Length: 186
Image 1 (tube, helix red, strand yellow):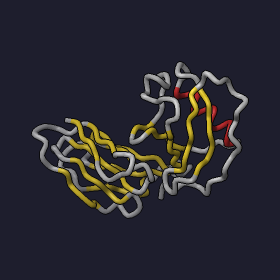
Image 2 (tube, helix red, strand yellow; image 1 turned 180 degrees about the horizontal axis):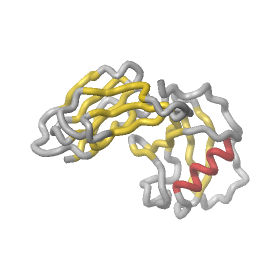
Image 3 (cartoon, one colour; image 1 turned 30 degrees about the horizontal axis):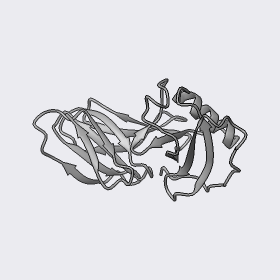
């Protein structure tokens, strides 16, 4: 459902200033090298994303990840925890689908074209407060005020695991870079 496109290797740009950080961008699914980018520690994440769009020569929805953290917003690269030589992962998103977490105890995928729900994730007993995708886009994790987090197959909607043990509501969840573990926050 959320798979990367075939990778094409682009030439490295050695013409950028030497005081910038060098970051390699890889496809999250297969690890193929996509490009090498240079940016300053004081550059904003939003400008890095724009630079990536310019480098790739296309505009498509994507997630840019540093480990399990989605890079978005207006913070600087340094504030985002990036450093010289770090590796970033790129996950292509379907152009016509978005995901929601809901107070009705579900998470869902919706068609942007029709506005109709195309996938429903049911199983929580209370509000779903947060959702995130694994770096390869194959898994969805949800956090709920029912004191659990769940791991789902993004394609089928099947609940693969329920994580129990919190004494209060679970407000957030994130995957490790290899998707072998998750962190929860309550």
